[in-house]
Image (cartoon, rainbow, N blue to C red; front, side, top):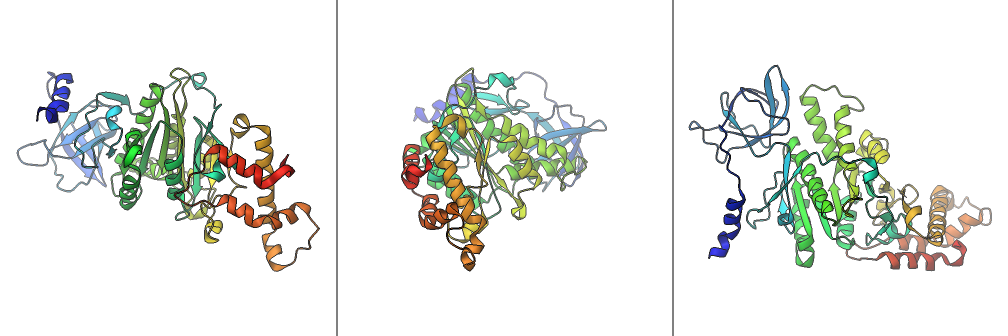
Length: 448
């Protein structure tokens, strides 16, 4: 019986009592989710508890996050709904401003943006904290990418080989298979720890993902941070920061971490909501500059650490609104990432899954981590696929005359094997060596 209370007793023993006088402010205004509080001076990023009831009871009351200041008042956003909020409600700061909970206690758990468990397994007894904005390091403190990363997906391993510590974007429109591809990578990837941030996605996807990946041996190395689309924008951003901070904490201890963020676009949407609420003018298609800067700062926190020897391999999905690859979020992510995988709706409609557009996908570190023979084979495969896709309409109409283009003739003859190489069922895992061997066997000596 006493073992049930041991974690609680350990937390009480490690807690440091706060004997400073308690301060509080009063809610002065609420407009469109933006709360103005008077009489309280706390830094940006601090969490505050708002008491709704007549007895000023702070227990069970919602949290609000400080997002700015104006005319001597503190601006906050609730991490929930503004229902029952009333003028004059007391606002009291709590916790450590700018710090997020991290530690080994999160392994095997599914939590929300505040670090509270959503898996029904009791509280998370964390001991450590990490700055929400990360710990800034110099550019030369990042070790280069030198080792290949095994995703378990044959097409990615062979044709766009990733590296340990690389940042990759998965870019596509809605309903093309981004989440399914992430699911395949989370299942087959070789990593010590897998941290998944499900930000702004459907609640059904969250429960399905937790059911599939938080079971068996994989559970002990997996952390899920889930903030569905129905939650407040600042809580969505906080969830992305929590997932990244957890990855940084484990990297600082020399661990190899795979960080999956689904999706980076929802983070940008949340940052846009907050920026517009604070009065920042919209720029590129309604995105204020600070919204695009938010995803840049988030992505730059992944990578290798020269000091600890740990790494964060970042995998971020980017939603191309209307399948537009020139969307501001897509363009910004593509410019800051070390590689991108483009999913094609046309290929998905033909029944090819995962619907990877090999000609448009790129890994910027592949030439540094693969053998020359592998690179030649990958270039040959890309050339065959690109040649066929560029002339597909002519071939289907019968307007192409055999012998006019030897490369296209070979692409037509190998169309079924090429498509079969790119196709892979969701439950199938193909390791990196097997992927390279399959590519070499498919192309034979002609790739040399």
